Length: 250
Ligand SMILES: NC(=O)c1ccc[n+]([C@@H]2O[C@H](COP(=O)([O-])OP(=O)(O)OC[C@H]3O[C@@H](n4cnc5c(N)ncnc54)[C@H](O)[C@@H]3O)[C@@H](O)[C@H]2O)c1
Image (cartoon, rainbow, N blue to C red; front, side, top):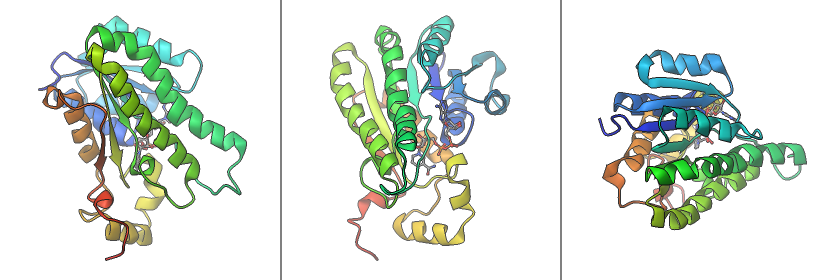
């Protein structure tokens, strides 16, 4: 019960890693504000959680004014102790076929959306000496084939995490990131159903692929907790050992 009566905001809480994270914080006693674009998905996540301590808000982190609306809703609950910037999308493709529009949407959601939420929540986090956990990716620490736009967005999130940790320290605001590899979620439904993809990832992830979203949620909860009170500015791979390799094949 590390989060008893702590107020935790989770973006993209309607599925995958965000839903698992919401469940984990709820199990540990938190008051939750679940953020997402689709009410029915948020309700689905909330269904298994303590109704008195679970709140939802339909919002788009990339839309003008929505981050402020989310923070106002959190303030009505008492403030923010933990912000989990989890919502994200993945635009695939090479430089030859990603359009300016697709690039813009990728950056708007993953990078500017994280910025908008962080900027809006910062005064509330300062007031309660709270912390942020960003859901970046191993794709923010190195490149993927045919994912350069996603890589650029997550690289931005990872380095923004480090820099904000420096700025936040004087106010007691910690900022960390987790860096998952292939995890079973809405984003990877097709990959999870493809035997060849599973085989290839299993060769690179010594602990096995794909990860269960709950395994990512557990590390998010650790970074957000008092157990990590002297940890800030880290990008922590939660990748089954993928980043341990120098890239050479077995
Ligand atoms: N699944 C993986 O393999 C993997 C690996 C590394 C990092 N990640 C990251 O994990 C995070 C969660 O993704 P997931 O894997 O659980 O996939 P997911 O698609 O199940 O979850 C993403 C959630 O974010 C929501 N969302 C997207 N854009 C939004 C917006 N503008 N405003 C509000 N909500 C929005 C989606 O509706 C969805 O519920 C993402 O940031 C993703 O990049 C995923």
